[in-house]
Amino acid sequence: MDTAVRHDDVNGAGGADGATGTRAAATPPVGIPAPAPVPADPPAAAAPRGAPRSEVTVHQALITRQVEEQITARFPVGRRLRVLDVALRDGRQALPLARAGHEVTGLEPDPALADVVRRALEAEPAGIRERTRIVAGDSRSTGAHFLPGTFDVVLCHGVLSPGDEPGPLLAGLGRVLAPGGMLSLVVPNVEAAALRPGLAGDWEDALARLVPDPGERPLRREALSAALTGMSTPVRQWYGVGVFSDDVPLPADGEGERRLVVEERAGRTDPYRSVATLLHLCAVRG
Image 1 (tube, rainbow, N blue to C red):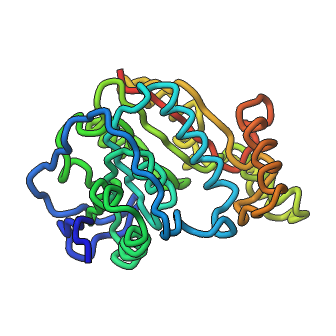
Image 2 (cartoon, helix red, strand yellow):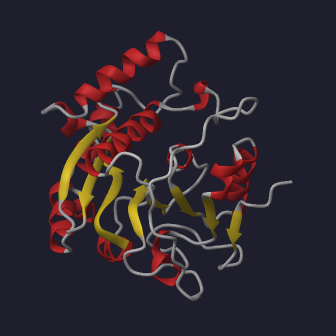
């Protein structure tokens, strides 16, 4: 069995991610080799390329395309990037980047989810397995594991929730981001929270969500943009994710592609992107 896939169990079973998550025990900082122009591995002849199309959701597919677009726009073609996913989960966002030739490190506190990613990696070519590392830890433990400026791209998707204070998390992510590196931040669109229940006819829930909640203010796009600008990582592009679609499985036929085309266009167009279910902010370290 290929043992190149590495799992650094630096936090035992790990803590829960989020505002009240348990911080990992401190260990010596870990660095990743400097980037080099290395081509991506060819697809494995007999291995699946990941989850079946029907298991990929609309929101996941949109975010993956948006990340690819920003990487293509901001980094030289062929450059091997050092990528950190601070909420690895099942690897749906991280694995495509490993397949594209990049060095990928994933933080995941849940051993069961980490095992899901390992099983998926067993079906990948050896080069992809060698470039993928799983670290036991959560999004707020980056300082315990990594040197400043270690990564070219940091993914923080679905970590922040209403009521969270994003400042400490963003500061930690900015610390490990190299100059010129990109932070991909996906958060719930708290300012449009009443839209979905209203369209579904759930008037009680819609009315409750129309009442301003002071705890949601730090997650508003303007507040997040100001916080990122204050740490010399201004937002260069932002998208709406899920203007018309809930996070449902993406159809495998032509309907799925047509849906993505419409969602992609709406997600970068005002006023539609401002009422999407999620916001995707792409910021660049100065």
